[in-house]
Image (cartoon, rainbow, N blue to C red; front, top):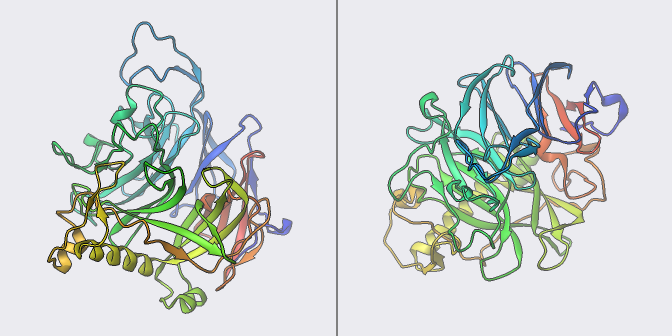
Length: 441
């Protein structure tokens, strides 16, 4: 497959709004080809040809982080604040668009997919990050109470600490899409539920940056960058996993993930995309063309204890089959008494205890509480390539070749295919342009 995004004759259409300085998210309706764009203070509905259909002004509005979603203390002075789009997701079951912004503690709206100016439901629930810079990743996949029939919205959110109400927002959660319980925690008991919190002692000093989320073969995943532990200043990337049918998040599991090239380790994941292997890559990986693979762009830390990335980047390709094997291998090691369970930023760590277990136990982990994997067990990718500084250019995805990207903040997260097999790309944050490039097979 060749993405012709770099040559001028491949540009079919483009869209920009000179009034807007940043576009954050884009999604493409796989059925109609319509394009939806979330920006700072704006929400756009575009035709498949990138013509403007609807433009919704979402901000600035008067707000304060000191206000709750429902009311505001009398002494707090509200001021005009930008509404930064933090999540934009299509719910195909109900043909609705879910858009979430940074105002009002991270409030979401459910909109008509045919006309986004029609607000179907306002969700009085803090869901996403409530400032411009903290990360949020959201996607829809099977989840409780009855997967794969029931769908939920998985959300990963960085703790902002700018408000007394932020402790109510889980770091990772599965949220209901039922109209009566829209975006409430999908399943909740007294001490458990479909959510995970960073404990109160670690929230301020252990930021978790959520980069990408996806679903594959009964599990949902998040890619993150975070500290190696609460006692070290070294930053690493992790792959977080939870089972679709886990109503308690007992299956919440993490493994470190990194990308190596020419002896150099790229430790900070910057962007990712999960798709099918295709015939050529599948042969190289030992998979079938329909098997899931993860493409991830990594950068090297700008200093040993720095979360800021250097300009040089690399792309790794991971087989989801291999990822599942690594999770299973590490879980089996814990059942054998090797390693630790309990992530120290969630709950105290304890040594794994040798336990007789069945395959069902290993797969569902229905009785394991926050299993932590030994940090020495890393999942390392191959098929890497280093790039030089700007946007993704003309590329051919073949074994041992990769997208060349200038700068670590690659546009891999903001590339979408439409039903006509064209690729729609958010080319630049600063120039605010969307290009359509044709895909060759």
